Image 1 (cartoon, helix red, strand yellow):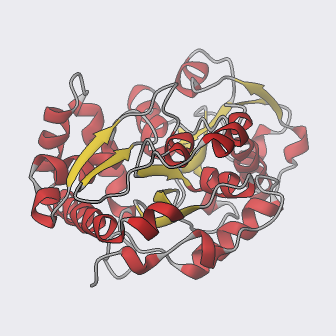
Image 2 (cartoon, rainbow, N blue to C red; image 1 turned 45 degrees about the vertical axis):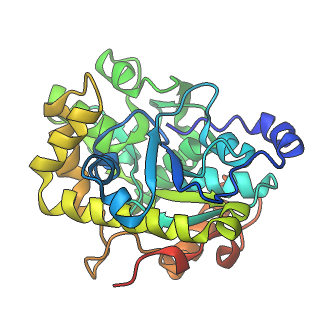
Length: 322
């Protein structure tokens, strides 16, 4: 879900220039998703399908990522105005020199988890076992945090790279557990294999942080502030509607995404809906204390070399008012 291709980022940074949209008279806003459309994106599609973007004065162009449109690279090169990013990818991109800024949270807690076979009663029981990871640094961090949080020794867990095939690796018994998102792979596995264990990372020592954020370059925020504010207002309206009427939101999502498995999306939305808003019921908020805790955790578990400056990496001023 989070293929960064950071090795190419230096080239992109060197090559990007003046071809990014300047927004003069053009209120089209391109939003690139982080992954194949699923229930966590429901509010985006609601906003686009119901015209909330046009009501706000912009025209939202929602795109799916592909090999040539990795979200971080697309933002830096100007091929996308906004993108949904995993928060760890935002931190890594900033560490590599990209001045990306998170401006809205899609969820208010981590979606990462260790998903295990039904016989694994505790993450500690993974000692001596095999755990699948995608190969991304954040996966290893999640595994270590969950096992350590359960009182186990992560050094005694053998990791196997399974790419983004956690579901298949678990169903075939290739691994005892795998790191994945509880709102997608976790939901799928619990439906196909009842009793599957889902150990959410923030239940085992990690802080509560917003896993997915909408981000832009600082250049876009400087040059097109009104368009960014209008887009975030439309998205907030879309997510408020999706939370209030999930069945109707799934119809919008299904109409926009050919081939969507609506039963699967229904299960996913039911799982993720409670974490789309904070304790105050507001969608999109970026909590500075939670973000500082995330930054420290990422450094502690080796995702980042140094904590990002949260005040520079995130900006709440573009969010709609309460």
